Image 1: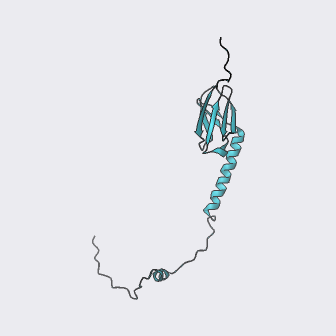
Image 2: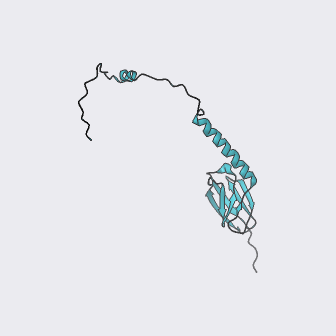
Length: 138
């Protein structure tokens, strides 16, 4: 039997993915939750023998015990709370951007169409031309 190398070999798998809106990463058929504050950013996922660690810009954003089963969803309760807070903040922001609530009328100035004729230098006819005799065909 030979001697061990001076640097320990890497065990497990590493992958870099963009975190989707559902804030989960899939490793070996299992879904692991990640801090939702990094949704849309590239995260590094390292699945070792004992745990799954997810980092974003060298900051750990998730740590889970490795599950060797398949089709299992592992969720950190702190990630669910963070997602709910981010969702509430987004809904509040978009509601504020939409404007006043239905039932409240905004005051809007109304301008006469003749003002636009003057601006564009259009001549306004004083009398209307006679209508042509039109026949209705059925």
